[in-house]
Length: 360
Image 1 (cartoon, rainbow, N blue to C red):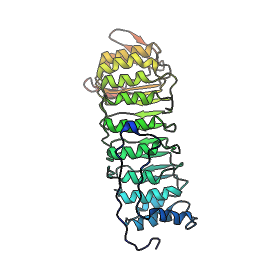
Image 2: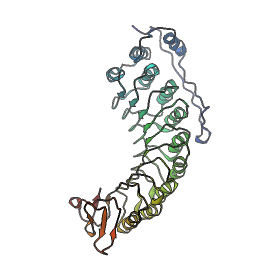
Image 3: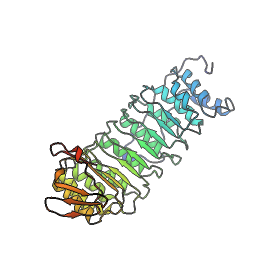
Image 4: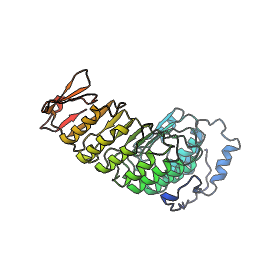
């Protein structure tokens, strides 16, 4: 067997309550099981030196921590992606996986979606053990309940100079404005992140302030941001667009299902000239004809020359009033006869139901 027969000692994790304002690159949380350093040294001294994919190390720690190995992990450790979704992986399972990833140089994408990961401390161990990892580029923690403690553990990892994460998915984690502030404050100092998914959380207009700070940061190289299915409302979304600079890197922004309504649509029309993005999603926001017309006016004036697609599905826009001129990028208001040019919006008449349209 790879492990010894000594009784596994009980680990007590002490996590300092670090406020989001005080998180820095120097924050370090010691999360060590008794004698764990000796076990790590055993590997570093030459034992299992051929364990380049971490499989033997994973099995060793599973035995030592009395947790059942997940066959899915063993199957994919020698590849570039480890999808461990819907497995209910335990806290000790996370620790064993992290130990394997310490030596693994091939895995770039780790997905832990829907594993009932809570703020009980599992991510403290996971990200602490992964400290210094330069290989992982994508982390998916969607559909868990990582809580404030998990957010702090992740934030400390994101602040490390060795962090190379480019894609981070935290969708459907019941994140609050305070949790989002913790993550975004750390990401302001991270230059590798390119794609961030914060959809289906509990973010309100209060998060718009820290989101604006993040999006206007000189360190920001984000290309895709998904904030759909939150409650940022019109003013919050308007402030976001105002904060985006014309020379920014963001090219895809999803603000769908945020209760923007016409108030937000008017602000979006006002600031759309500041955008350097290619795709803007405003699906399901309660926008009516007046908000739609304001956006069309702004687009017709060529205020957003880089915008290729604006999605306005599931809004209260009376579709029969408008008709697009095929292959001309023009848009006609059949009621007033006004022609809008350079409007990257298409109407699919087959989706019209009782005036509740789906523009895509």
